[in-house]
Amino acid sequence: MSLRIFQPSSLGRGARIAATGSYLPAHVVTNAELARRGAPLTDDEIVRLSGIRSRHYAADDEATSDLAVQASRRALERLAKPRVDRLYLATVSPDHPSPSAACIAQRALELGDAPAMDLTASCSGFLYALDCAARAAVCGETVLAVAADVRSRFIDPLDRATCALFGDGAGAAVVKPCKPGEGIEAIGLFADGTGARSVYVPAGGSREPATAQTVATRRHTIRMEEGPQVYLAAVEGMLAAAEELLKATGRTFDDVALVVPHQPNRRILDRLAKLARLPEEKLFVNVDRIGNVSGATVAIAFDEALRAGRLKEDEEVLLLAAGAGYTAGAALVRIDAELLAASRFDPAATSSSAGT
Image (tube, rainbow, N blue to C red):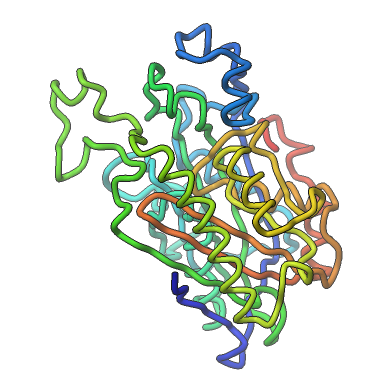
């Protein structure tokens, strides 16, 4: 692996995360409910294989942009004078093939004429959006980096490999300019197209347009036909990305206060912790409650970690992800007092919407 690493301070500038927000739909789907729906796995089997006990599913009238808007509003409400110059939305499940979900969210958020675009990097989506946001921030812009997915609409309920893994949700971060050396210290990305079919939805795109036949044969649902290889790629991708970024910044795992990884399943996280020799308290895990929310998992977990008081001022947190494609990413972020203060204000507490 060879990460493309961006360090804002190398340009004599900085980019910091000023606020975060997350949103999970109200409907909590337990393993028992999946079994009642016909999933070919029992509650005990799902827990043993994945460590997942529940996940959230979007309501019938909720789409990806709706989740993105909820998470974004929570992040923006934590700032005294919210402003957005640009919006990046990472997703693999946009509302429509066209236009972008970002444009729909941009209008709902009343961002004026701020440029808005979708980007797709599977489960590494948030880190790809964060990279774009950091680059725009060093140019003086305040950017909203969001990841949102409604994966429940693409699940084959009879597929043992995938029926219990995925959930829905969104996470957001407001990224602003700052002094060099503060905030986002480094962020690195990687892709290897040989894994393009590791986890994929066969039909619905230009390669295989939707037809009655593709619908009848469930080719619009997630396929993961190489499970063991996906497992290895996720573990190796996150570990390699972490080690390379830490080496580039003169750090080791000992220097990091908390590791916030993508949450594919508990077995992968346990293997990552063992190989990186991470003590239990140093790895943030919420996959048991929310499942795999694709590119949004890191954003949701980071927001949860901040609001749970897992991080202190001047500590460093390592964000990690690996996903289909193959893609991978890592970001080293220094926590500042303003971010902690913003995290202590919880707009969800005054909202009737469900949330994390």
